[in-house]
Each structure stands twice: as C-alpha cells, then as structure tokens.
Length: 269
Image 1: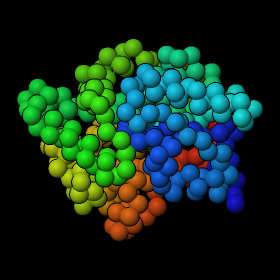
Image 2: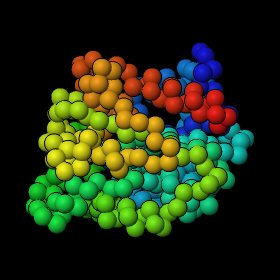
Image 3: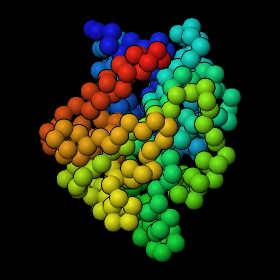
Image 4: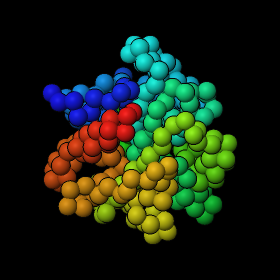
C-alpha cells in the first residue's frame, strides 16, 4: 500500500442515474479498491438511483455529515459521475454545505444538459420515448432500477439545466474541476452506439450520452479517450461494464482516478 492517494480529506464517490450503492456496489468497478490501495479513505454518496435531483442532494448531504463525524474532519472531497455531479453542486450551493466540501470533481456530468433530448422532445417525441424505454432496458440488464416516470430524464435536458445553472451558482469556497469522455465510435459500447451517432451529428464528441461541451465545468481537465484513444463510454467513465472494457483492451480506468486523487493530495485537499 502506498500513500499516493492519502488526501487530507476523505473521498466520497457520488454515483449517477439508475443505480444505488447498496444494490449495485459494482457501479464504480475497480476504482474504490484501487484508491484505497493507494492510501485513500473512500465512502459513497448513497443517493437514490432515480431520486429527484433535490431529494438526492439532501441524501448526499446526510452522507457528507456522516463522513465528517466518522472521520473527525471538517471537509470532504467529492468525485461525482454523471447526474451525481449536478446533485453535488446543488448540495454545496443550496443546502449550506459549502464549508464542508473541499473539492468537487465531476466525471461526464451534463452540466449544460443533453441537448439532443431537447431536440427530440421538440421534433420527434415518439423517438424520445423509445430511447427512454431503451435506457430503462439497459439499466435493467445491468442490474439497475427503472423510473416510475420520465421526469428524472427531463432534469437532464438543456432547458432544465439553463434554469438550474442560474439558480445554483458555484461557491468560491470549493475547488471545481471536470473531465469529459469521448466514445470515439460505437465499438466502445455498442449499446450506446446509436445515441452516440445521434449526439455527434449535432453536438460533437460525446461519451454516448453526454457531449464534451456539456461536461466542462470549473477547471476543465480535458477529454479522456482511454489508452490508444480507443474511446470511453459513459458507463466506462466510472469503470462500469468492466468485461466490455477488458475485451476491448481499454485498460483500467482506475489509473485515471488515482491520478486525480493524487493531484488533489498535492494541492492540499
């Protein structure tokens, strides 16, 4: 065991849509143990898989307070994937938690929404509903949950996030940084291949769900395409679908997270 990732403040991994930390502990794949093996103290966000954003922000704040007490510290570092990053931002700015979060690192978070959802909502609502159904099937196959309605998806639209960003300003007490991912082509994740092409046509490079342009927030750390630039899909950005990742020779994305946390350590977080 090394101390490469032994940060001043503990790490909380906040998951995205469709899963929860109790029923789907594999969400983060090999990442938690890789960080712990390098000295990090790691906890999880424990939000609901399809919880409304503000509700999940409240659940995340409960977890933060639990960690503060357990570790006898005054702050945490949050690394959030996808919708988890939006929930963390709301918690920090609107639930009075800015003094208890040292840094927020977002991975493939749609900070400016997923504009193709808006496009389809206006021009082809039938296709949009078909895609929502496809998402639900994919989540079920992966062992996740299904929503009672599509409202949680509507919270990821560009229109919704424009209002959200106006109402949820960043705190100058927190260090914000972000990473985006590029699927490159459908081979990185065939299940997201169609959606990847659909987004790429009008909104540029994406991970099969979130455009690079939407994932940029705070200090943008760049677009990660994996070893040899073969592509990283939205689930693979948090080490989901390990078997597919290994089959394609994409390496272990845990190495990226080790770099992220070791850098936070060097920065005093």
